[in-house]
Image (cartoon, rainbow, N blue to C red):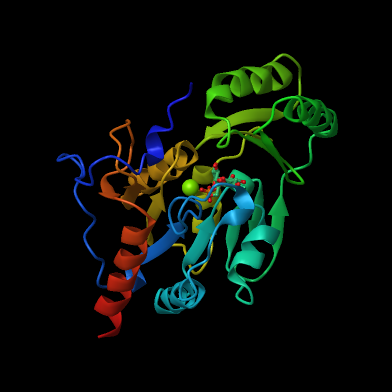
Length: 267
Ligand SMILES: O=P(O)(O)OC[C@H]1O[C@H](O[C@H]2O[C@H](CO)[C@@H](O)[C@H](O)[C@H]2O)[C@H](O)[C@@H](O)[C@@H]1O
Ligand SMILES: [Mg+2]
């Protein structure tokens, strides 16, 4: 059975001593904020559509964006259309599908081509999921995810099956493991590269990236933040290796920390 180390909420709540809590930035004009969604801003739920959006979260993020001169983006494995549903009516700049879709602050979009191999892989995965109760298929335009949260004992089998489909032929796709999920995303994209693209232009250019994330896909974003002298904050209680330099324990702590950032700049 796969270990979902990144989110075992039953563990004691003390952070590892070598990972400090992040300092609260006082001058938001120096920072560009890049925030992951699932497991960071939102608590993990039993299934992708069961997440709860805290009612005050969209407004708080919007105020943060305003206080940061617009230099905030959501960087997520979700599709942009799903992010818009979550935060409606507010439309944030977004890197969706682990960086395969981008919406810039002016509303312009960039996206990687859809792999011609994807429809066939999705059909095969649907058969696999139908044959294994508890598995759930999440379809995206450029990607697909097999969730095993309701059948954790199938984690290894899911990953092996997905790797077989993706890695034994030329697909232009890559396997992206996550929390109780194995995803397939376009080759050559990651959250770090997405942040680099945002950082090329106003209002992000010239600022320091501050990245908050909780999962394997966020490690590329942490590397980008670190390489640019920014701050990388890992969310979680476990001790798995990470390139982040600071830690917050869970999404509740993230939301409280972001509220404290706002307080420190608006007082
Ligand atoms: O990059 P993120 O914003 O963290 O998105 C990563 C994936 O998150 C979602 O799946 C995860 O959250 C679900 C809801 O809490 C949970 O049920 C699932 O087990 C997690 O893997 C989402 O469904 C994926 O599309 C995202 O790529
Ligand atoms: Mg996440």
